[in-house]
Each structure stands twice: as structure tokens, then as C-alpha cells.
Image (cartoon, rainbow, N blue to C red; front, side, top):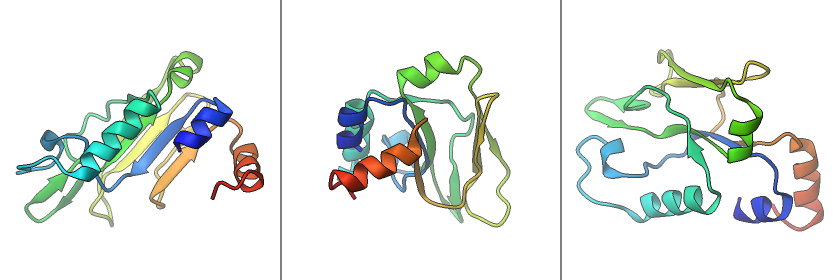
Length: 136
């Protein structure tokens, strides 16, 4: 991801189930900071991303466990380009995850059933660029 951002300099929307939290408050009964928490936090900082508030403390629940695994993060360019970004959670239906939806008033992203998505305005070109330049 860092290599894509450095080479392409495109607006980024990262959304989905990251299978990790950023801090202990995002996981019920968490007692320690893990390497995964640090790595995700570093990625967010390196890419200079902003959280979009989803108005849901936890997005994944199973029995007594709960975490905020699902998130939407965007680059500054996305915020500047889409002034009316709206995010919300829908009820859990068949999954132990809440469905997270991003509405830009032009395009509605989500709910998605796949884990990680990186979406840019030139996503097809991004795929071609990555294959051509050895990123996979």
C-alpha cells in the first residue's frame, strides 16, 4: 500500500475488515498493545489517512468478544473532493460484522462481502500499473 501511494499519488479510500484494532479501546477487555495494532497505526500514519466516524463503538461481535475491526479511512484529497461524505453502519444480518456503508452522494461504497478494498479513481489503472511494475 505504501508503495502504491508513493508512486501514484491518487486519492485513497481504504475500507473493510482489517482484522485488527488501532488501540486498546477498540477491543473489549483489551489489556495490551499488539504488534498488529502498531502496524495498522503506522500504515494509517504513513499514508496520512483520516478516519470517517461510523458511529459504532464495535463493528464485530461474537458472544462476549467485541472489536472495531471494520473501518473507513480516506486521504485528504477524498475529503476535499467529496464534501458530503456520509458513513453509517447497518444492522448485522448473517454475519458477526456490522455492514459499513460510505456514501459520497455520487457513489455508494458497501456493504461488501470481501475483506480489504482499496479504491481509487483510477482503480483499473492502478491494477495495470501494479502488475506492470512488479507489485502484487
